[in-house]
Image 1 (cartoon, one colour):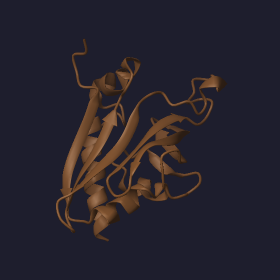
Image 2 (cartoon, one colour):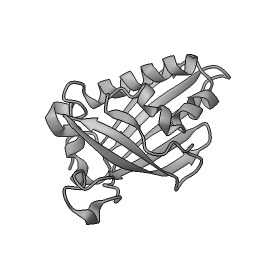
Image 3 (cartoon, helix red, strand yellow):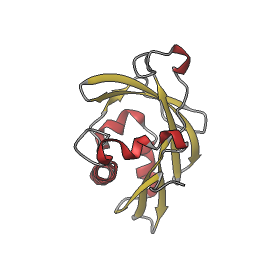
Length: 169
């Protein structure tokens, strides 16, 4: 039996329409603008996300190393939900195993939008470590695995705060 949660969720009430927020979330080229982890550096090909099955590749940086993550959209409901499963996008991130390139590790990131009115939306960022073998993601480094400084929850809260500012512009 697990002694800790395998899903982390942080919610913020944002004074913006769900459609405006979803537009930002489905634009991978904008993700680095509201990234609270300070790991995102840009996108390889800035194509709008429109459906389950879409793929986008992010340029990442963590602990002094640049790398790529391929993201497979696994849940998509217009103006309500978007989730993706990351996969190693370069040989180093795949642990030197070419067979792991582009293969999702079983965890997912996403956002759930719950409009309260035309101009106010509850936004939840959700991380689900999925498979039991991915429990290390939440437990690693005292919960500060993202950048060695902030916990997963702190980084998610910062993401939502930045998203709110960006949605207001």
